[in-house]
Length: 175
Image (cartoon, rainbow, N blue to C red; front, side, top):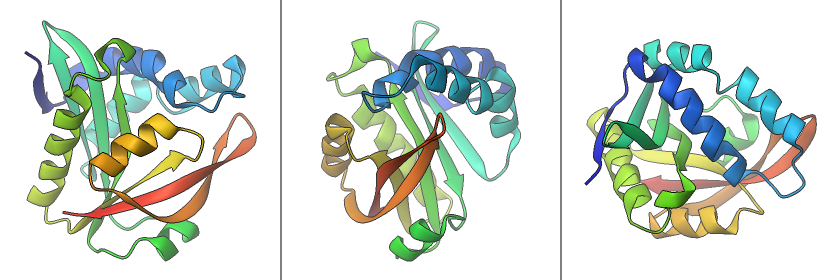
């Protein structure tokens, strides 16, 4: 049975490894290996995870089994800075579910649902009324998962990946 807990700075190396294993699963099919490598280097590196873990406006949860991280989420508290998201999100205070990734071999077993439930519970504990996220419009599996978790499409935004502007749906749910 896996354990879900708040990550610490000691988890930064394992989180970077987990991100390298899971981020490509969420990318659109045309995303190049170079674009993925750049994003991992610029956004999901061990140093960046250390910074995220030290940020009082972020909360990272991890799911682990037998000492191995199987999944993680990152909550970002506060109003969105993207204008398209600001226009779409209606519940305040809000938090972004910035990351929600589970290793491919853990898909379909309920781990992602348990991790999301713990994440939303943590957001509620911080006084948040709604949660939002962006998901690539081509990621049908993730969209189905988020809809099962109670999220609904409220808008659209773009996401830069490897110099390409990808189209994301903005999803929101009450807490």
